[in-house]
Image (cartoon, rainbow, N blue to C red):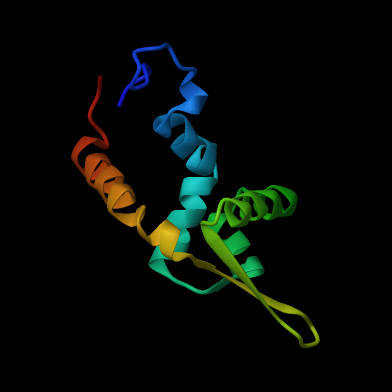
Length: 115
């Protein structure tokens, strides 16, 4: 389905299924976080920060909150000292993994090719 809806009326891109998808996974870090969690889960916050490198603590925290609000990431907090929090993918996020694998396949085929 494209930018026109079923009635043939023009629709704003953000109101389409594509727009919804991009609102959930768009941006610099969300797909990388999902990829990391797909490779190894559950993952603790500091371990994720180490794996991602250049991301700030504030950005990682906000991206995880957005993914959690979208139903893509589950946050599990253990009542202990020091606090222990782990993140893992939800069933909804698991349905996105074949798409991430296709993106990886595209990267394998095209990385290093000049335009």
